[in-house]
Amino acid sequence: MNARRPSVLTALPDVWDGAVVGRLGSRVLVGRRCVDLPDLLAAAHARLGDVALVSPRLRGLDLSAIRDLRLCSVGVLGVVDPGDEAGEALLRQLGIRAFVGPDAPAPDLYGAVVGALAVPSSTEGSDETEEATPDEVAPRGRVVVVWGPAGAPGRTTVAVNLAAELALDGREVVLVDVDTQAASVAQHLAILDEAPGIASACRAAEHGTLDVTSFARLAPEVLPRLRVLTGLPSADRWPELRAGAVERVLDVARLDCDVVVVDCASCLEDDDELSYDTVAPRRNMAALTALEVADQVVVVGAGDPVGLQRLVRGLQELAGREVEAGVVVVNRLRASAVGPRPTARIQSLLERFGGVEDPVLVPLDVERVDAALLAGTVLHDVAPDSAVRSAIASVAAAVVR
Image 1 (cartoon, helix red, strand yellow):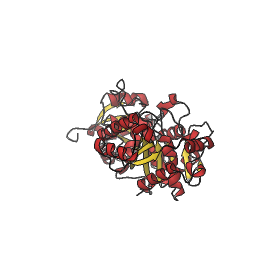
Image 2 (cartoon, rainbow, N blue to C red):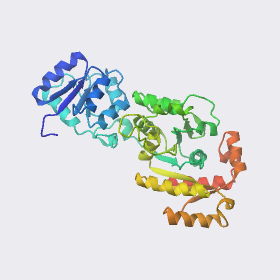
Image 3 (cartoon, helix red, strand yellow):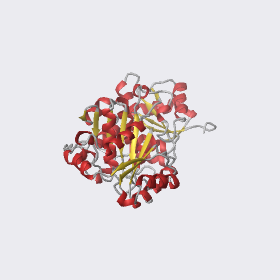
Image 4 (cartoon, rainbow, N blue to C red):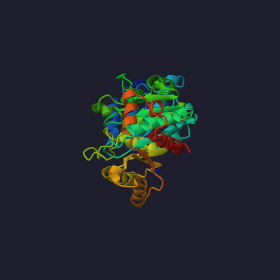
């Protein structure tokens, strides 16, 4: 790309556009002078430019738009007045790292354009650019994603009680529900407020206004040291959870806690009708994004023949996506479903077919789990001596080991 003149797409105020393009002169090709954000995105998809010049004044500019530009292999250069700290902060929140002033000398302006060519073509690795915001150099907590195959194996029960056990151990914990199929963390903890925490957080992330302070307002504390960002109250709102926004929410969440526990949906397949369109929202991208950024993945399967088959296939699906299952949990274990000596049987089966050597086995205890659900609390409060609670506590110990 450096062997030819870079091509730029400009989406700047009229008072800046002519001067910036004039100073760049013959050093660059002008692919298109865009009148608005849709025009800019269309030009990027048409491969008309290598670098997009944008300003904080561009109406509609958000996190997803920046991500879409980078998915089109278009670098992004922010053009900001030197004294406009709020404008630069906004663009930084949206993931832009390269900046230049509209009155910069021609050599500096051209150097900034060339530097923007090195911006990654996807959001992956964006936190490793040379310039980092104060948030990005702050201590970061671990992201633990609780996932499991289809069939309601008890992902949310495990996620809620795992988060509680980590909090009881003295850690600051945030529980985030990104399930786009059937979010239920709020119901498990008797949170009656219908305001969708994750949707509000993603909306703020899209517009570059999500920070630690605003996140704290959206994630109330439900138990000592445990805050919850509730899920979507209606599954048809899943388009609000776009990949870039979910990633930003988890990045902000981990800035102010020790562990972020994420409950996500089971489905990971690509939508065949949308797979050709890299910028269209996809229902499963929230789960896929969470798994991509996870430091640890807890996989939950049901302790019956159908659930175990799905668990083995789920582990294979994760491996195909280069996601490592850190802890495997077999939930609702009982002899009536798998025969005598269920522990030995399941350990042997998972080692043979799934390569899992040390699964955590959670026994079936309908009465105590139902009691916690009815009370809208965790097992520690209603059944502190139960075998189910003890097993999930061992999962908590494993994920922070």
